[in-house]
Image 1 (spheres, rainbow, N blue to C red):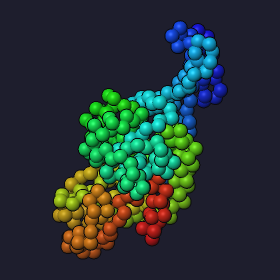
Image 2 (image 1 turned 135 degrees about the vertical axis):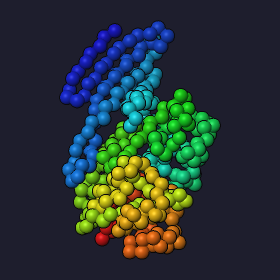
Image 3 (image 1 turned 90 degrees about the vertical axis):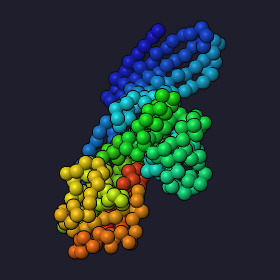
Image 4 (image 1 turned 90 degrees about the horizontal axis):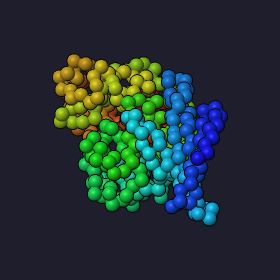
Length: 329
């Protein structure tokens, strides 16, 4: 066996030549590298590094004739798990609506073979792609039939037991977002996973520029944001939605709570927010719900808002910049 290691900055390559009687000659090319990811911190761009490990197999027969080439890529998911995939993946199942939309933005029309019934964007995929159940109740058998070489999931949106079961059979990459920088990291890593790095990095850059130049609220209004009805449920300070609220210059009155707390209207009255936002999803709030809030907060401003703009991490964030600018006027 002959091995050579070359160090060129952040790129480290190892080429290994092996000979097997059964397979002829095989050249294994390993590459470990890190790629820069743009993230947002206030009005500054910062760079994080995402390690990637590639293993390339070039196969020859016993006569030295080229037979095949394939690559394996190992990359961490956002839970710190090593996920090894055939690269680039050719059969992707996405079980998170916002990440499905991102995959479409990245141009993976043929590669995505399965989505959930809640992956409504783009509409063409919603009509044509195989549906594999809901985000919280996946159809495991339907996913098995698709034989994916990559499943893209989310810690919060999917059920742990189902994802763990799938991970025993297929490569599953799991995202976990609590803020805009993590969402930008997710976009960049999905690009690395799918071989669409250039498109993903371009999108990240556009989102960073958009939020950097965002016209924020001139006064830091105290707001309450509701996602569910009966019981009324809001968002705590450790959520992506709360981070979006903070980014546009408002203050979440429940920022000291975690995740998605239930809150009574009596408690809401005590908190006395200046503005109440009723989201279009996951619960589809309507005009009639505004009246319930006004009954306990007659002086508060109450608005129906597009929940996708506040909660969809991915390519939707590019559209969210303009939406938020109009909202805070």
